[in-house]
Image (tube, rainbow, N blue to C red; front, top):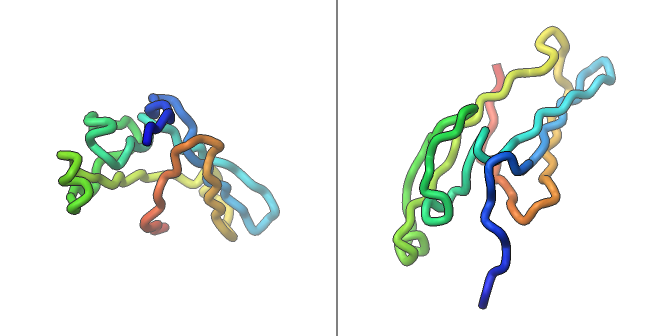
Length: 109
C-alpha cells in the first residue's frame, strides 16, 4: 500500500478552538503545525521543538518499535482571547487536512 499523503509542514493549520462566551461572543484560536505541535511519530518528523508548546511525553509501543520510532504528545498552553469574559464552552474543530491532532486532556485556570 502506497500512501501519497504529503508530509506535514510548518504553518499547516491542524485544528481550531472556538471559544464560546456567555455574552454570545466567539473567538477562535488556530492550532498550527510547527508552532503548537508536530507529528506524534518521530520517524515522520524527528524535530521536537515548537515555539508555542513543548513535548510533554515521549514513549513507545510495539507498533512504533516496528518502525524504529517513538511517539510523543505536546503540551500546548493557550490563553483565553477574552480573559475578562466568562467562557461558556469550547469547541474543537479539525482542519480540512489529512492530519488530525489528538486532544488528550484540557485544564483551565
